Image 1 (cartoon, rainbow, N blue to C red):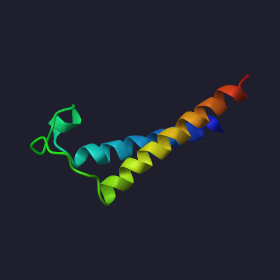
Image 2: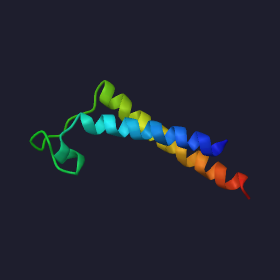
Image 3: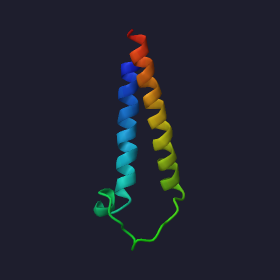
Length: 72
């Protein structure tokens, strides 16, 4: 059961990360600065995707620990 849940969450995480990268240039995805080097706050959908990435990552790690413990 945990394995299927991990696969689903990882697929959702991949989609969310790709949606975030799609909004910025390819150079920014590799660590460069796009936008002249100025800091920009996240707003709207970009902020929601960022927060969803953090939450799903925490859930994925928690389920991974549960999966390991259930196999012992």
